[in-house]
Image (cartoon, rainbow, N blue to C red):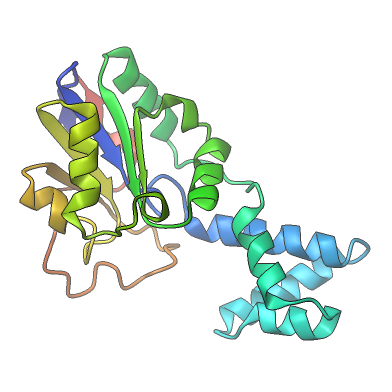
Length: 216
């Protein structure tokens, strides 16, 4: 896929399961929590907790009962820890290429401000972003057009691209606003594996990896 990038172009991204696999954030948080609760046998506890999650049960309920700690405290740790995560192949190079060509970089993501900000910092992207719209900060979630209009208000360019993974909600607003929409195909590890099933809002283009994109 070729994209012409100049001062009139903005490349805007979803975050979770678009720039990295969200399951890695979950694993990072579980490890952090287990290390806090059981330093001597962290790995044993982590494996058990992750198995509970994979079975569809609530790991926090198990940890709360076993270690006499509140679920609210566990959720706080989950949401506020600084994660050990890495971007998908090609993500950083692509964003750096866009910046070199004086294009703009934006983020439109749902979630908590601290959580999503920490993810972007951990991925090494934070300092490259020109506009970051996080649902908790602005008070509206996708598919609200408002979140995308805030990007337009801030960046003021003529060509917008939006990259995301959830075909059910991610592309409704940007398509309505005339943005070019690009869907990242699930690599089999997405937390919401049904995000492309029976979707009525398919993106205009599809990619399997950011390594497929060339900036002109």
